[in-house]
Structure formats: C-alpha cells, structure tokens
Image 1: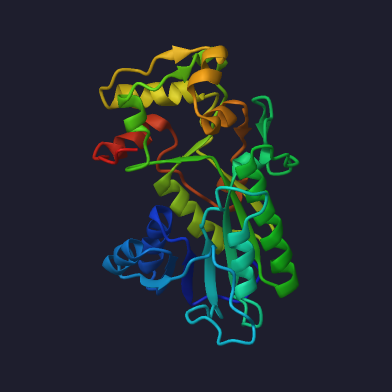
Image 2: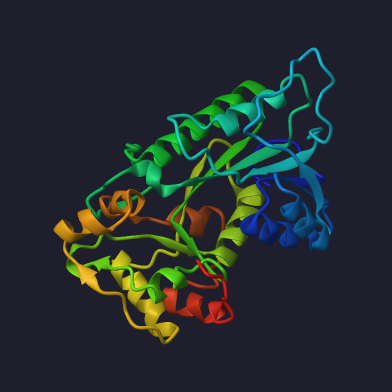
Length: 308
C-alpha cells in the first residue's frame, strides 16, 4: 500500500448507506471486519442483515464534555476509516465532520482516512476539462460545506500524522439511484443546447474506487472519480434514462421558464458546467471501470424500483 501509514486490520464507515454497504461487501471478501456508523434504527437493521457491526450515533449532536466518559465504539486504532456522511443541509460549515473529528480527540488515530467529497467544489468551469490541480472555487452552499470538510480533515490528518485521501466524485447513479419518479412526473428539463456538461460514476465503480484509494492512494492526494464519458449533459442524462426504461422524455424549457418552474437546488446544478479528467484515478489507483458509459451502467439498473 502506498497511502503512507500503518496497515489497517478493520474498516470503519461513517455514514454507511448504499455506497458504504457496497464498500463493506468488498472488504468483507478480504475477511476484514466492518463497522458502520448510522443514525437510525432502520439503517442499523440493514447493516446487521449484511453482517456489518452497527454503531448508532447522531453527528448533529455536539460531542460530550471531554471530562465525561468517552462515547463507546470510536476506538479507531488500526482502522481504515471512510467518511461518507453528507454535510448538514444548511450553513457554511460541515459541523458533522467537525463534531466527528472532535470525538477523536485524545484517542489513538486510525491508520488512514478516505473522505468522499464532490466535484462541486470546483464550481463552474465553463465546461472545460479539469484535473485535480484545478483550484477549487465552490459557489453553491452545499459545495462550500464539502470544501470546508475537505480542509478540516486534511488539517486534522497532518496534525495526527494520518494519511488522508480525498475523492471528488461526480453524480452517482445506479440501482435505486435514478430520477425515475421525476421523469414519470414529467418535470421539465432545460433545452439540451443550454444544459451543462455533467460527470457521473456508477455506484459499483465508485465502491471499487474507494477500495483502491485505501490500497494505492497517496497521502494528501485528491482523485477525481468519474467514468470520464465525454461531453454528456444533464438533459441527455435524463433522456437516456427515459429511453432505457421506456418512459416519455421529459418536456424541455428555456432559462426563463426554468427560473419559474425548477427548484433552487436544480437551478444551482444547471449553473455549473465542467468535465472531470479521471486519468489520475485510472493510472494511480488502477481502477478498471465496469461501467465506463451510461448505457452500460443503466443495464445494471433494470431492477430499479426506487421511487426517486
């Protein structure tokens, strides 16, 4: 392993949802025990079904006083930590990340930590091809919170001498992660010639990249995680999914109508355009994509019954 640090003998996943469970399965195949941190009893039940040791903890709650008894289950010595928990929905900072790092004060640090961030930290790049050396310029609040978390965990890693690897991922799709309800409801999309270039990664390929990052990622390194498909745009994405599932394509509108009809969240996505260069992921991490195109990835989603 080249992630400069002691070897790990177990895996700890903060925010163990769909991607976390996928990553857990891959490490279980290597006979490593996995613990998943979740915030609901329902998620706890899912983890037990998959032989993942569940830890229930609400990261929106500030850590207890250092003088009190430490919270159980956070002994991360010799653990590989994945941080997959999303930031809060409001504010300029990721308080969940801050609270998690505070909870590790005074404890033996983990072997290494992989943080799953977003390509949104790059902001609008006018559709140009960008690599990991491109300076971040997050505009959307959610991206600013992610960039806050990136900086916080990187500074913590340096202080604790823990290798931290950052993955900046494009939009994640896969079984249960498709906008089928939106398409069925015929919510409009912007005209294709106005739509921004987007970046995607299949959930299965993202899980493989997360494992590769722990095995071969370099300490302090950032990796763009994307299938690298060229010049695809958001409207093409919706249309391709509609065609694949035999649904009518959504109606198209211009910017004036979009401002009236689309949510602020969707509008913020439409105002940013960039193309991720994924060569570092392919060459340094050695990721071999199972789904290098959307068409190939959608073939694995035919059993998708998720209403999203």
